[in-house]
Image (cartoon, rainbow, N blue to C red):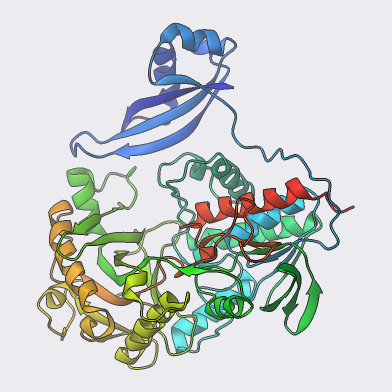
Length: 533
């Protein structure tokens, strides 16, 4: 138990050391009575451009916490219970085989970590390479266009998040989030991720963090195998019996499926063996790039060069009444680059990435439009996946069939003109680009919705609609195109012992929510079975 205080404001020029004075004043006690305090959240209030502030939430230790809170009667001060500590009651069933985790992205990593911590010695199989080899493979793809379909921006140690901004923002309210952040810090992430309002690690630091967690899982008795692909699940009497990995059969009764949102061949295998799933909505569109300075000036005003201010972010939404579709920014990467993110031959995908410093010239974000099952042809539960494939193939052809991306200046896009030369924004897409008409690789309703939204977003962020801003095609992997339905025990509704988890199963939308979902499914196994001796 501790005292939680909200809404403590410091000027942008104030040092954090002044927080204890503010806490003392808020609690109406001498500083000496404060045993300890820590920052729970730090957020920036830039609504008044001439008076930018940092707003803090802090947790305070005091010898008479309950009495003090009751006496103060302040809506910003309350008692807070301790956070998630993974104290789970073990089940009583004997395990015939150790649990298997498929995929080593956020859901798989944290499912495996919790199982390892509790003595279950999980086996992790990951189709891609370890993060160092994977980095070399991805760099080669960006430079030469030579794609490895098993290890790329989507597949490999760390999952798709390892080649993104490493964003840790989430809208879910779950104390498991605290556990995830603590473990990331323990593995080498900056301490600030536990309290800043929009935390990120950056792809450069995230790689080391992931390696450290992997080594910890191994030290605790787990095993992690790379370049190991799940090829088939053997099912008997509607239960998982075994799996085939690289041609070898492995006995298995508890299988955590944390495959990520791009494992299309795995979706096809699951459908073939009778695992129930259904199509779900996602969003597609483009990446938009502006000079980071434009975003900074719009968000911070005259203070945009202040040394305490980091590269500015934005989050934008728009609802088209005419088209009945939402348009929104997604995975905004301040001071980052647009990257080639294909995972299948002859299909083009773009994504965004930032390093921890976020100090590159451009800001980029996905600019996407919602699509759903009514937009997909056919009756297969995989029809959303085929929808993605169709437009990725068009984009690949439009880019010259070499993983170069089709791009347009925003002003030309708004006028349906193919661009002929760049303006003041240089495209950052890692595999090169070709001037083309993006109408040729996106549905007409997506194009129309994007145009509507740009007009609206330009009113909200000055310079958003500048003619020279760059649109890069195409963004299709905002989330999984299917949901692998599960019951109250978080197992597949059609196959006992199969635990779909994370983004690939349709139950998460980012690093933190995927990690939390991985913890949830691990907890189910722990509560049913005894640890392995």
